[in-house]
Length: 204
Image (cartoon, rainbow, N blue to C red; front, side, top):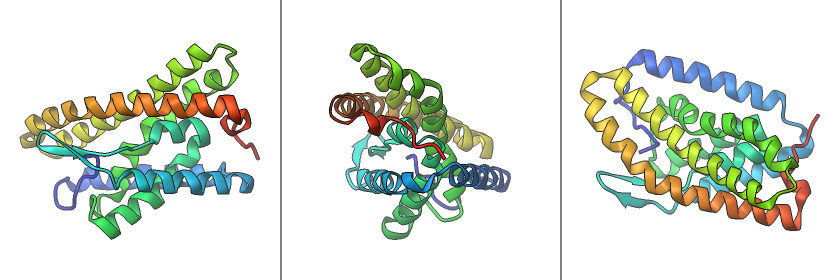
């Protein structure tokens, strides 16, 4: 349940999430070069399409997030890209809510951006394919686990009654983390082999 629905979180958590999301989107747009817009649009569409394949896991369901991959490929532009995807998911499929759009964006995009910025330069510059694939897998899995931790934190901060549920939900992210680790590693390895420029950020 990366998409928290309306009516679950407390007002302070919603306000803080909206403020952080606005800051992330502003940062992403500020650093987004016009040459990177096509790449960002394609990745936003991929993130949106990934939500169409939900798999039931325990009391919840999971689907591909791809935030780690986006963090590697477009950095802070992950925020506006994910914002578009999450808005359409909420509007068209009822994934999450409109009042929780900000906190959902932070929960999903922030871990991918942080890990992408930290490990992306090494992934792009290393001459060792094994290291590149391993680090990409870490980013993919770490982004999912980071999202799970932030979702659990948002629930726990809203009400202590959610704490047991938050712990259970966090466990449902483990299979998804393994899947995203594999997918991120495969895509990064493929791009490094056939189009290395796709791994390089487009700087203003």
